[in-house]
Amino acid sequence: MTKAHILNTYARFDITLTHGEGCLVYDDQEKEYIDFVSGVAVNCLGHSHPAIAKVLEEQSRKLLHVSNLYWNEKQMALAEQLCSLSDMSGAFFCNSGTEAVEAALKFARKHGKVKGGEEKCGIVYMDNSFHGRTLGALSVTGQKKYQKDYTPLLPGVQSAIFNDAESLKQVVNENTCAVIVEPVQGEGGVVNADPAFLQEARALCDRYDALLIFDEVQCGVGRLGSVFAYQRFGVKPDIVCLAKGLGGGFPIGAAVAGAKAAEVISYGDHGSTFGGNLLACSVALVVLEELLQKGVLDNVNAMNLYFAGKLESLKSKHAASVVSIQGMGLLLGLRLSVDPKAFINQCIEKGLLLVGAGTDVVRLLPPLNIEPQYIDKAVQIMDEVLEALA
Ligand SMILES: *Cc1c(COP(=O)(O)O)cnc(C)c1O
Image (cartoon, rainbow, N blue to C red; front, side, top):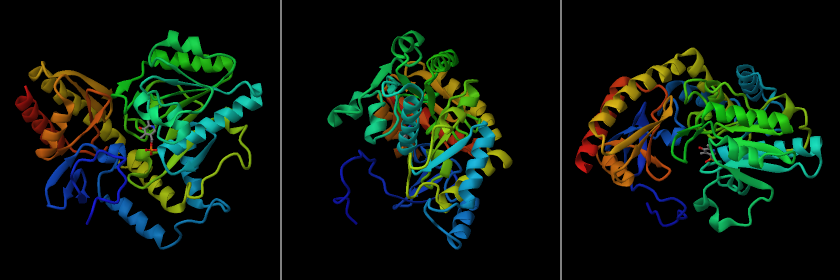
């Protein structure tokens, strides 16, 4: 097997993973790892989950795909459930996070034109945000390293400082059609939004009839201990973007829209060939069932307390190396003063998969059904590595 024909878009760890079960994965040398990356918040039920395997097999024997020229029952059921859980009006299905963001941006532009004419097209995004790699989503991703080689980007976009209400007030006006924000910035360093900041964003969007878009691609679908991340902040957006965890490892994205956005959307406004196919929606329905009926959401809240307590002890023990504990639910992070790359590499060496965020944060993203014994093991490995790096 050769690596030569994969384009160089990723700096990969030199590991080839072949199988897994629960929070454990194995490479082609049969080395075992505890997986606290979960495919970057995707494998929310761990690997080889029996309910996912079962639904994939059953659905694949009936219909995989029919296109959106026709109705399909699984898509209707998933949309109905997402809307009833959020009191939203309708869902648009796609295949990834960046596509969910693209859909939200297009819906907001449409809403702006219908309500305020050609001029009402401005989109406000946050510094240090991450919304995806396609050109629209990239245009509202507040990190120069991702944008620099792809200019010119989308016109009409402007940034504000995350968690700084004054800076938001300066850029939102009658020509704004959308404000897009992550309730917890994932890629940018696991930084929680201040609820007061989100409230201010909500108030500004109401004042200027702009749509508030929450990108919950990473922090949604149970990651924070509620189905939708916004439910932890008491601020409701007009559109919520989902992907990553929604399919538990199967690609699916969704833009779930409230009444304001839904009423301006009509035939032909947007589309996706694969979006909402039967296989993807069947798996997503299983994920929601596990979260709500099989106790996985409760587990997130219990394991947050357990894990956060262990991390506090780790921080006290290694006060010179651990600067802070970041995040909420099971989207946690350690801000380090030692080299995060060395920390991650040594953890991997000892059988714990971790991934960085921002410049100095290590993300901790176990599957949502993680058991305490694996948190213990992970913390023990991190303890040893911090000892070695001190
Ligand atoms: C990962 C991520 C995206 C992009 O998702 P893709 O599926 O990689 O396109 C968008 N927004 C946030 C917050 C993310 O974490």
